[in-house]
Image 1 (cartoon, chains in turn blue, cyan):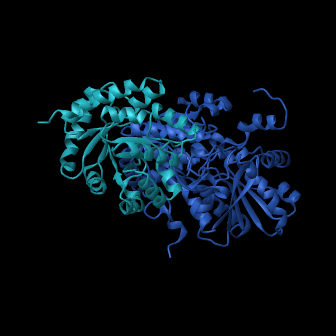
Image 2 (cartoon, rainbow over the protein chains, first blue to last red; image 1 turned 30 degrees about the vertical axis):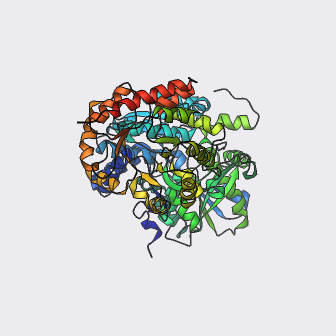
Length: 401
Length: 233
């Protein structure tokens, strides 16, 4: 039997993944795969990337024992993987530096990217600036309205931001528009996808650039506890921080992997983004995976208080891990996420992004049911400065930025 | 209705679109039309009924353009069987490359539905051979790097592409050129370069969305058909 870590095989994770794209992009994907396969074993490339990750982005990030939170929950020991301390404030920069270097090596100096809340857009703009590339970012008109500060940050970093007016004017439409740009300019342009989604080889490339999270956890938790953790918890939108956290452990069946999706206003309301929990198989954005769709295969609108989880699909590797029951996928709703956001701020002096606040919300339920010798590691994928306004609004308070 | 005007205007094959929420290969005109069709409640099944109605009155081949998810969602076999029984002759699926089409081709063959694959300026000769091998009905040559939508003129690179690809399709499958074709002179130039047909979508859709008289759609069809009637050297 092949080990789980050997996926993808021929671009597939079991039956998931693949390459469902217009013919015009097939050559570019083959070229990307070939370049990536070559560079991923190139020592000079690895050294260059490692240097940017440590000296520019601030890796390794700490694994912090959240003693106050642990004590108050009265169960398992809780560690936080501090991706929020990275330059840019989130794990996205791991991937944009990796793919930015890849683009430069492929001699493609124009990079395009999609963004929802703006985190991937900002991380792309930073990588482009430091690596001497020209970045153009697609962002839904509705998200632009909600995230004006990030739009300004991207422009400040030298990127052009294009407003996407089609469809629901959010993340999925930004991906559609980026793909249309890529079809048009494929000869000169690198598409810097932000999550572990899309046609092969993107889910693999993004996972590989994010697996540094899990590799560091493995080393750090072994040092702190003398053994592997019992449970890893991460939030799942497209699933890049989760797969980066899980991947170095997927061949260790004794480590439980738990992804937490956004239940939005509640699964029963239909206003959520819990793709793995209630979605069904289908094809979108180049991949076969689980999707939130209607009976005719039309993609459904999603909702989450956290824009980073607001996506109707999910990475194909998560689809496989779910099907094989290797990972479990739970949910937390808007209110639970806001509560967890406040609790971590008050208890540990750490303001988490609303995305990992979903993972924290689930841990608050889980930890008290476990004995004190159990070890949980939560991926704190980003910091919450960007969400302060949204949270204030949810709590009925007025803040002005 | 629109289809009748086009048939009266002389189209050889009628292409109907199944609307999809996320049409990544389409430009603004067809995006807007898809969006509007979805709002009006158009579904794959209602498109099948439309096909059946047209087939009841006219003897014209009808192909559907649909993204892959509506097919996958209905079940590939079920989509093919139901489509065929309503008169669908072929399918164009812009996000289904040859490599992912095993099941799809199996069912298409079983139910007698043509598999119209696409080739593009980025397609290598090696890929083109593979695509021609599994294409039936016709081969859809995407004329340019980009999405659907009318352009003012046909680029010289498109004509070179037609000439180059024609030698691999000749005697095996008809070559039809689409994307950007909207005027009789466009049709004339691609046909002179060796294409067996031209595909016009956005130009008609735009007229429909602007609410022009059916008579004008028919006139455009007549004028687009005209350059294909004269014998080629």
